Length: 155
Ligand SMILES: [Cu+2]
Image 1 (tube, helix red, strand yellow):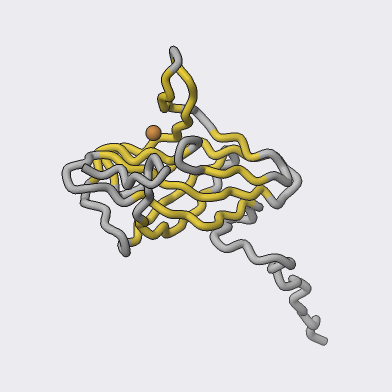
Image 2: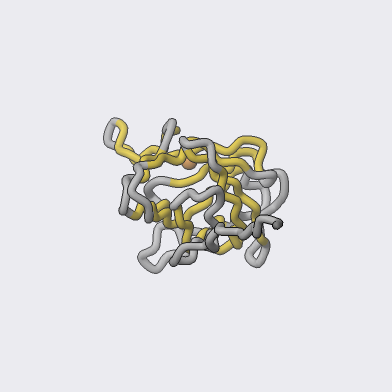
């Protein structure tokens, strides 16, 4: 008599939709976007909200994109009384918390753009986590008013 082989593998999808999650990483990316920059501007930045919906602390340790020669993780802080951005090795993603990458704060820096970024374009980004997992996402290019307060900051 032949053994009846049954697949006892339950549907792997647990509740909850992880928009861009991969490899079981409980990191959710919401509202990613890349700043549109004027022609000739060599650098830009990507922003998003990262949610660690799991119970394990994670960290973002790198990012990659074909849109720029170099991609770094950056933050902003006061240096000698001036707001400057600087590179960071990692962006901590504590369990159960949300971390916002936004203008004036943490961001994914795109250095040496390989093409001009205009509103309506999509930029492919890969986020690398400290557990080795990679999250692939597509971020639309958006115009951002820098400086606010009525001025449009342009020249
Ligand atoms: Cu930067």
